[in-house]
Image (cartoon, rainbow, N blue to C red):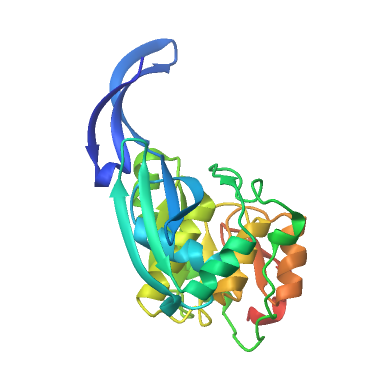
Length: 272
C-alpha cells in the first residue's frame, strides 16, 4: 500500500513509499510521484470549468487558458486573478471585461477536465475552433536552432526528471534558447501555463517556437493559433486533425522532433 510521506514544490510532487520488484527480489523505497488536483476556474463569480492540474503556476494557467480558449482576446481584458485553496481542491477566480463575460455566457460549456482529453466536454463541434485568421508566413527557424532547443529541454524538466509522469511545454527564441518552460500532468495545461507566463512577461509569441514533450493534438494547435504561435514541434507524432488545422491556420507543425531528426507536416517553408 502506498503511503504519503512529505510534500515539496508546492505539492506538485510528493514522496510515496513503494514496493519495488526487480529480478525476483523486492525492496521498499521512496518514490517521487506527480500530484494532480481539481482546479476550478470561476469568471466574474460564475464557475466555468474544472480541470485536473499540477498544483503550481496556477495564475499562469488561468491566464493562458483564458486567452487560448478565446474567452478574452487580449491580456488587458483580464482585470484580476485570485487563487484560493479549498477542501475540495483549488479555486481560481478571474475578473474579466464585462463584454467578454457576456460572450462567455452565450457559449458556456460544462467541461469536466481530464489529463488526457481537453475537448470531450465541449457542447458542440462548433465550439472546437475559434474564428481566427491564418498566421503570417514570414518567420524562419533554422533546423539547427530547433535541435539546440531539443538538446537542452530535458535538463529543465525538473518535475519529469523526478516523477517521469508529466508533460512539458517550452518556449524557445529563434536562436534555440529556451526562454521559458512549464510542466503539468496534462499537456494542454502545460501549454496554457506556458502561454500565460509568456504573455505576463511580454514574450513575443509570434517570434520563436513551441516545443511539446507530448503528441501534437488538435487542441495544442488550436491554442497555438489563438496565441499567435506559428511553429509547433512535438517529440511525438501529431493527429490528422492537428495537421489539417495547422495547414489551415498557417502553422508549421513538426512531429517526432528527437534524435537529431524531425518530420514537418505542414508549412515546411519556415524551416531552413
